[in-house]
Length: 224
Ligand code: SAH
Image (spheres, rainbow, N blue to C red):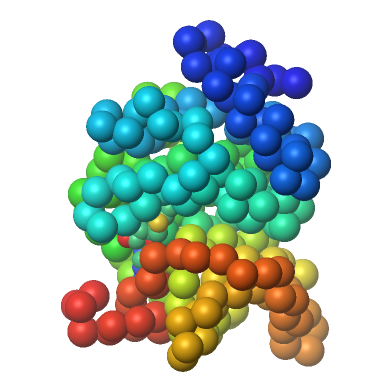
């Protein structure tokens, strides 16, 4: 296991987190190795740094949260990346999931609507030599056309429906994971696969994410 591959004092905490993820059903070795190699404490605010390796969501400012490690690992396991893919992430947040993606795919583009979060994510990514990841400030419900199509799209905020623009930017055979919120407020994680005839959707279980705000998300007016 690569849990001890980073030379910092948090190795024991990462190893414990990996054990917990395994117990919860994360068995993709490349995902577990990525968790072992990524210093989550550098992606959370100082005030919650001592909790960085807890298996829970944490506040990252601007009313946003870094998702629970289990949910992040489940996302990555669901995408079944092999290391050759071009991936689009919507909702950079802290940049931690972006860093995990960078270890599992060939190219990563991450879109965040809040400038301040994008800026600190950029800093954290640079501090661990992930300068090759592109972080863009934009409305991610419109995707990021200049580098489309993508082999995988990961949406880290819950929208009312699957944004059409994202489906269009998914390569044939490509997979997207996105939480969809029903009018009653229930959120379900959905995997969308682009096929010759359109898309296939699979329901993966209940989740809880912050809202996806944008033209093809919630509250269009607050995003403009
Ligand atoms: N995966 C992130 C957690 C992201 S929380 C992490 O590891 O920290 C969800 C993020 O989605 C928030 O930062 C929020 O600002 C962002 N977001 C919400 N709507 C968006 C949109 N339309 N485009 C881009 N980012 C959006």
